Image 1: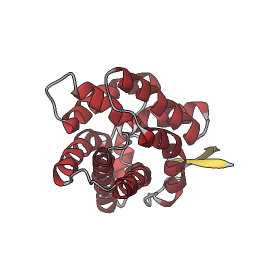
Image 2: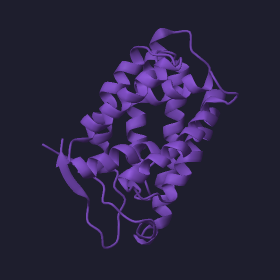
Image 3: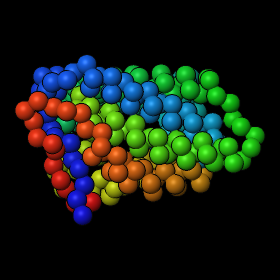
Length: 221
């Protein structure tokens, strides 16, 4: 079985690959959806995804909002791109800022429901929506987010599957976040197990049209 790996484009190639307006719209939709689905999981209060366990853990030690921690963390993670030779793009920069702002806005707009079934629905929508959102902004081919750059860089160099690499990275961040005081629950486990397969499922269907470029690589699933 094979998995989709988006084509590697340089920063200028990303901007010159054609259909830029529609790709920017897809990028922004994906980023806002990603932040909103993070807020859904926060308000579901059934366990955060691994990165958000980390963000929450850090937020307990610094005078920043949840979304602000997301932004600062994204900027710091960019430094880890250097050994992987990942190329940032417009989408990378917007990812650092937009997701954190969208997460804070979503948290401000929603309250924690009292009904358990509503919280469960919010959690499921958050996990599946998170995978779709990631596929949308990756598929815009304007540069992956800082966190995605880690597993995409590893994917291109190891040729292992998305689900294996993404899950391994999520579990590592989860442990660090837990040690910092982040909240772990059933939703955390579900996210860590399902986010890789969910992203892999949506990636082939969210690829924006590019001019004079291939459709990407196929790697082991």
